[in-house]
Amino acid sequence: MSVEPEAGVEVLHNTVLDTMGSEITSGELASGDVLTLDRIQERFGVSRTVARETMRVLESMGLVRSRRRIGITVQARSSWNVFDPRVIWWRLAGPGRDDQLRSLTELRIAVEPLAAAAAARSASAEQRAEAVDIAARMRGPGEAGRLDEFMEDDVAFHTLLLRASGNEMFGALADVVAVVLRGRTQLGLMPHQPVPEALDLHEEVAQAVARGVPADAEAAMTELLAEVRDAMLPLWRR
Image (tube, rainbow, N blue to C red):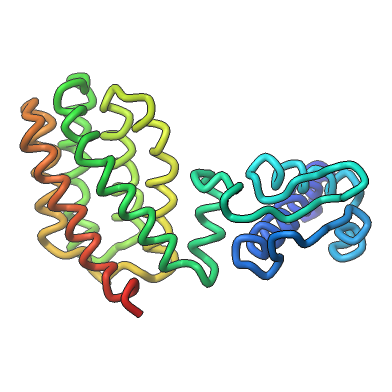
C-alpha cells in the first residue's frame, strides 16, 4: 500500500524528531553541539521543510536553540521542558531511565495524594462513579497478568483523579503521569502481575473519593505510591 505524500512527510518528521530527541536527551548530542539543517537533510535524506520543522519542535521543547550566525545549538538539561511527554519518553527509553523514573515517582508522591483528596471534595457524581468502576475493572486484568489492559485502566484511573481534583495544575500533569505508567509496562519494569496490595489500594482510593472523604483518599493514594516507590528502589540503588 502506498503512503500518501502528507503521511509520508509526517512519518519522516517523526522519525527524525524521535532520533534527534533521543540523541539529545541521552547525551549522545551534548550541550553546546551545533547542528545545521544541511547536515540533518544529508543524514536523514529529508527535505529542508522536514529538517526545519523538526528543529522547530525541538526548540519548543527547549532541547535546541536557533540563533543567527551561530546555528542550532543543543541546550543543557536545565533548559529542557521536562514535562513534555515526548521528552519524558525519550529519557525513559535512554540511559538516564532510572533517574527519570525516580524524579517522576517523587513528583507523583508529592502531587497525587493531594489530587485524590481534592477529587474527594470536588469530583462530580459521574466522576466518583467512574473512579469506582475503573478500580473494580482493573482487578481482572491485573490478577490475570494482562498488563497492557491493566495499564490502560491504570492510566484512565489516575488521569480521572488528577482532572477531577478541580486543580488545573494537577490536571495538567495527567499526560506526564500517563507516560510514566505506560513506560513502566512498555519498558518491562512492571511485575508479571500487579501486587494484590496495589489492586486493593486503587479500590480504597476510589471508594474514599466516592464517599467524599478526602483524608482517606489521600492516605490510600500515599500508601499506593509508597508501594510504587518501593518497587522502584532496586533500580535506583544500582
